Length: 273
Ligand code: A2P
Image (cartoon, rainbow, N blue to C red; front, side, top):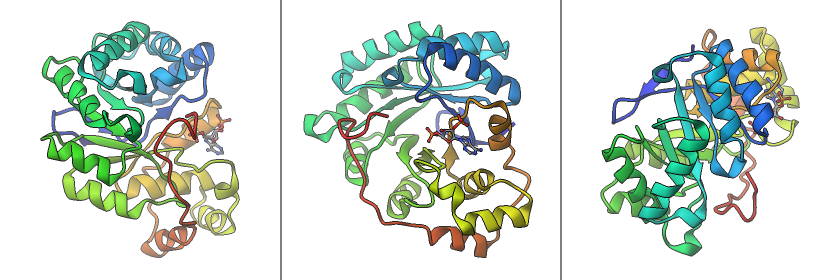
């Protein structure tokens, strides 16, 4: 099992979990049950992935007790109000077949709507009722998080696109300053370029590991939570096996040289994830 980080409400968030985009219900059921059997305890889904029913089915098939699992879901922009968040939670919980979720995230800030603070307040209200165990955001930039902090709420987690080519150093510093855990989506990078990089391949060979393991180790060794998606049994197992070797400072620095300085995105209209 992956080591965990304890959140303010007491929940234990594993450092490595399973992403489920773009699996459909049938694929999600199969992959989630296999992942849990393999030792995964953190599963990440979203309303927008349209696979929460399959994720719930996979959880039940696995036979692992609910309280040993950490289930995350997210809701879409049309629910950015207190009542909306409650309705979104109820719909997700019904599809998942769960009576609570461990972490609920606002999927995108959609700052054009101006309701990204209200959306987080809606999650905080559900937490008071014991329906969610932790409050989170996704794709929030520091300016959006600052508005949430100004409203008196510290999110437990901000999930952002993060990999060695877009290491989000300033955002991570902001998270650390405020005690917000950074969770990396698409931790292996989009496409396969990162895993074919000669430097990453050389580090992998030096450790007798795969390039993907080196990249995932880069995340977890620095305290980020990584949620790679894989539906391949070997890669599922491989991705979880990153807690028994260590990258040197020099190797971390070498991986940082892959930073492309690429711009970020803040709404789902430009990216369908
Ligand atoms: P596969 O499911 O065939 O393993 P995401 O960026 O959404 O997390 O997706 C990760 C992508 O990387 C998927 O296409 C997945 O394909 C692939 N992948 C996952 N683990 C590995 C690995 N260990 N080595 C190479 N590719 C991987």
